[in-house]
Length: 110
Length: 110
Image 1 (cartoon, each protein chain N blue to C red):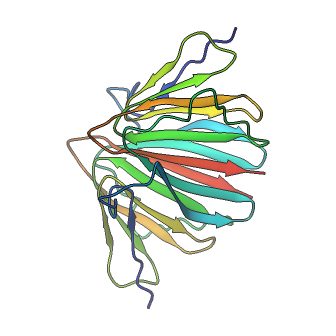
Image 2 (tube, chains in turn purple, green):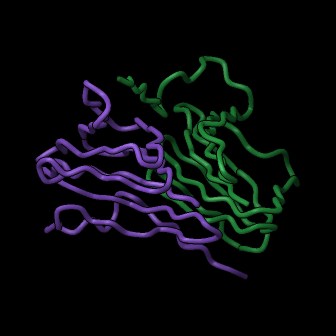
């Protein structure tokens, strides 16, 4: 008989966070599922993420503001919000909640 | 200039649900991300799901009890709980919350 241990996305959040904490939850067959935790974080000024693969993100706790370089208005994300960030679409994190940890999952595939 | 619309996992839950409501949020490059909503649902008695591919599931709202055929104890899932259901590991939903809709995401890849 097996015994399965469940993971929980809201558990094991360290009290002292680096700027952004990235943890791989699953990496298998070309897919990677990551948890990202941050508090009061912004991408350094004038810096943009530019990835060579698509990424799907889902915010689970906290709040965040995300910008695309080619879009006038930033996006304000609350729990449950998700979006696909296409490859090479330059984006940055403008803000995350300074009080409550913001928890995301990000899914990458090739 | 683009304008991005965010999806939200807690939105657009119909008042009258079928047994389980499956919706594809993203299907691209061999990956599929689904939202599953159910209320007071159980897999029909003596019936097991047997899939030929791995599946990763995350419960976001509600509660659920899941069983593996080869495991003595069922698993009780609360929001934030996730697990990998390996291909061909027979499993069933024993119970979901009868009051609050249970909302999951399921990720499939080949």
